[in-house]
Image 1: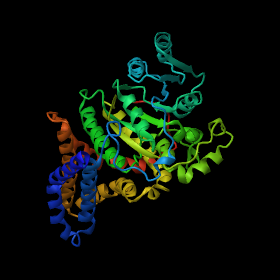
Image 2: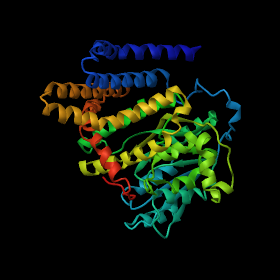
Image 3: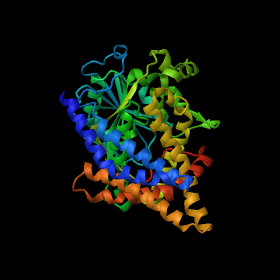
Length: 457
C-alpha cells in the first residue's frame, strides 16, 4: 500500500511539473495544417520529451533498493543466482598510464566480497603494462598480458574466456567506481532473476575542467536518470554503458564470439559498442539460435549452451561511476563520431526485433531512432534552406524549440541536483546537438569502416 501511494504521489507531481509543456502543446497543435513539417516535427519532439520525463519520474524504481513493481508473468522460468554470486570484473586497457592505477584501485576497493578482478593489457606501449605488473604484485588481481594488439572487443573476449564468475562486470580504464557500485548492481540481479544485465549511473569525473566537460556532465545525468530510467521501467534498457556494465553469465556468455566477430557493410566492425552487446541480451529469444549456430564451434558455445530467454535489462541509479570525458572540441567530436557509428550499426541489429518487446519499449526505441535520423535533415531544412528562402522566422522558431527542450532537461537536472548551477549548460548541449552533432550522422555512415581503439581527450 505504501509503495502504491508513493508512486501515485510521484505521478501527480510529475504531471504537475509537465503541465506547462502540455499547455504549449495544446496551443501549437491547431497550427499543424499551416506548417505541417515545422510544427509537426516540434510537436513530435515535445510529446516524446514529455512522455519520457513522465515515465522516468513517475514509474522508475531502483532495482537495487526495492522490488520492481512490473515483473514478467513467467518469472519462475528465470533461474536464480546464488545469494552472493561470484563476480568477474573485467577491464581491457591500452596506453592508459595516466589513469589506470586509480581505476584498478577503485575496482579492488569495492565492498563486494566474492570478486575476481581480471585486467587485460592489450599490448600497451606507454608504461601501462609496467604499472599493472606492480599493481598485480600488490593487489588481488589477475593480469593477462597480450603479446599482440587485438583491439578492445577481442581483448575483453579473451578475458571472458577465462572468467569464472556467475556475473561478468565491465568498466572502462578511465573510470572510478563508488565502493558500493558493483554490489548494488549485483544485488539488483540477485533480487530480480529476470534481469539479464544492468547499467550503473555515470557522471563526468573531470567535470570542472572546461565548458565541454561541464556540458557533458549535465547531459550524462539526463541520459541516465531520464532516458535509461524510462527504458528500465519496461525492462528494455538499450545500452548497458561501458563505465559500469554488469551481465549475468548465462545471459551473455554464448554471444561473445558474435560480438568479437561482428561485421557490418562487409567489413569487421571494430568499435567495442556497448549497444551491440546489450542487443544480444535483449534480442536473443529471436536471434540467439542463429548467432549460436553461426559460431557453433566456439568454446563460448560448446562449453555451455544456455537457453534463450526474454531477459529484461535494468538501470541501477544508486550504482555511481565517474568517467573522464573529452575536455576539448576535437576529441569531443571524435568521440561523437564513434558513438554515431555504433548507433548506425546497432540500429540495423536491434531495430529488427525491438518491436517484439512490447509497445512501450518499441515507442521509446524507434522514436529515438527516428529523431536521430531526422535531426540532420531538420537542421538543413531550418538553418540552411529556410533562410535562403527568406524564412528567418522558421529558423528562429526552430532554435527556440531546441532551447526549450534543452531547458526542460536542464530543469530536470536542477530538480535532481538542487544547488548545482550546471543545469544552465543543458540548453547549450541541445543547441550543439541540433546544429552540429546531428550533421555527423551522414559523415559517420560514410566513414563507418574506419575505426581503431583509442581514447581521445
